[in-house]
Image 1: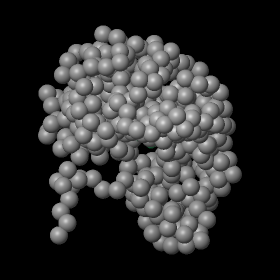
Image 2: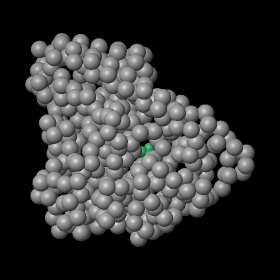
Image 3: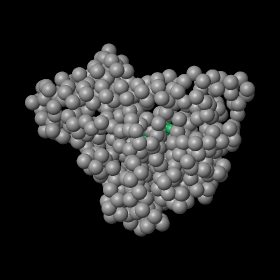
Image 4: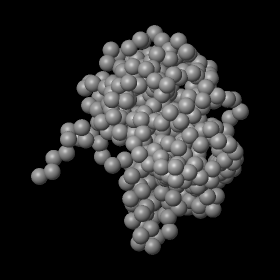
Amino acid sequence: VFRPSPALSKVGPSAITRMTAATAELKRQGRQIASMHLGEPDFGTPGNIVEAAIRAMRAGDTHYTALDGTPEVKSAVQEKFSRENGIYFENDQIVVTSGAKMVLFSAFFATLNLGDEVILPAPYWVSYGDIVEMMGARAVVLPTDAQDGFKLRAEDLERAITPNTRWLLINSPSNPSGAIYRRSEYEPILDVIERHPHVWLMVDDMYEHIIFQDEPFVTPAQLRPDLQGRILTINGVSKAYAMTGWRIGYAGGPAPLMKAIKAVLSQSTSCPCSIAQAASAEALRGPQDSVRRYLGEYRVRRDLVITELSHCPDLKATEPDGTFYAFVDWRALFGKLTPRGETLSDDEDLCQYLLHDCGVSIVPGSAFGTPGFFRISFASSEAELRLGIARIREGCAALI
Ligand code: PLP
């Protein structure tokens, strides 16, 4: 009999994985589904980055590298943090990993004990909770309010901290809400962190380059150099440069933490892909015009999604400040009946109805710790978005 490790007891396939599988199955059966569930850019990786990878292969960069990244990619990361965020990290304060998810995984693996707590303001990215639970620690989900723009309030954080709290994890811009913490919103939170020296702060800046507001992006390590000794700043090339398949993420943080992370990496991935590292160095150092072009596209799509959704009277979508996601409040439809007589009693019901009866795939808010909402990704073509939202609109109008 197969017996999985107890570490997996609380972890099942994520709602996104399930939605991907169900969508693929319907497509295989010949159904035409408007896909709005996937969190990855639909653009190709820019040509200069692809060329850098080809050059690396031709030059024989096809062997193991240093476990935390080649000197070349690490210095590209160092320059990035200094140029774009005004933070200086020494070489031993940087790791480059197989995707940002591996930073999260190895940082939690390196620091969490049974019973430790990690505070996750909800909505939060699906994987955070699962990784924390895998480590035998407890994800302490702290709901935020749509009225507060889904941002954590310092007093709520203060109340949630216990002697077991190890980390607070903030993701800005947020997947799925698109919320971005401004300087004035970070400051009271950082004051709370300062008052609790046993609490460390993990920030996931993955969507740093996908922001629509005029105010410049800020990150805690830049705002509070005095707290840098307990801040881990995570980022990656997946979203900014349309490089999800290359699997490169990186982070800067205090040297003792990075040393512990490296111990995990050395017995898991050994090193990230040598070719993808060369490509990522080019991404970070080379021309940034593709990033701007993608952003322009996302802005057009965001406007389209918000305008189209505004024609659905029972759905409430606030304009996201960043990312390529819209987080939509569907609570006004709660309890209604589908044309087939099924009651919509939770997010899962709505997503199943929209997928099977209306042909559009989305992700339930409950997967992000926030039931009553769903996430639409607008990292797909305008035609697909128009079709998908038209189907959502028709699907909602058909409810009784
Ligand atoms: N952080 C957030 C908020 C994400 O949405 C994702 C991917 O969906 C990641 C991290 C993972 O990025 P990577 O592809 O570098 O593992």
